Image (cartoon, rainbow, N blue to C red; front, side, top):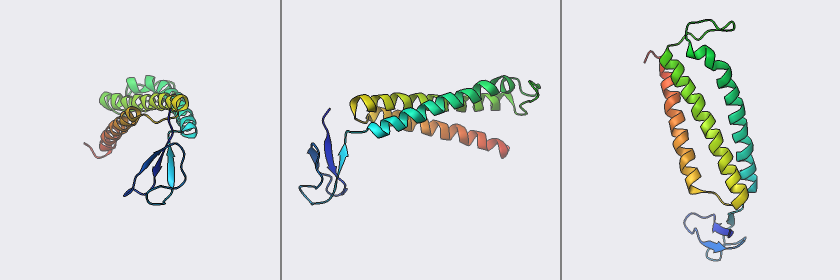
Amino acid sequence: MAVVSVCRDSTCAVTVDGKAAVCPKCGGPMRLVGESPVRGWILLILGLFLVLFMGAIAWTLAPTMMRPGEEIDGSSFSGTPEQARTAMLLFGAVILFGFVAIANGIYMLKTRRQSAGFVVVTLVLAVAMLAIGYTIIGWDKGA
C-alpha cells in the first residue's frame, strides 16, 4: 500500500505520495499517513484486553444478574430484570467493541492503513455504549 504524507497545517493540507518531511507548498511539517504498526498493535492488545476481561466479568455476573433477588454463590442482584438485561447489553457492547478493535488492529498490521469503515463502526459502537450507559445512570435518578 502506498504511503502518503499530509501537511499538518489544516489550511494547507497538501498531500504528497511517499515520505516527505517538509510541505512543498507552505514549508510546514508533514505527517505520514499509511504506516500504522504501533497503532495496530495497541488496538490488538487493547481489544484482547476488553474481550478477555469484560467477557470474564460478564460470565461471572450473568447467573446473578439473570435472576434478580435470588442469592447465588453468596451474592444477589437487587435491580430489576430490565436493568440486568441493560447491564448485560452494555457488557456485550464492550465485548463487541473489543472484537472490532482486534479486527481493526489486524487490518492495520496487515495493510499499514487505517480503514474508514472501522472508524465508522467504532464511533457507532461508542455512541451505543454511551446511550446504554446513560440509561444505566438514569436508574439512580429513578428514571
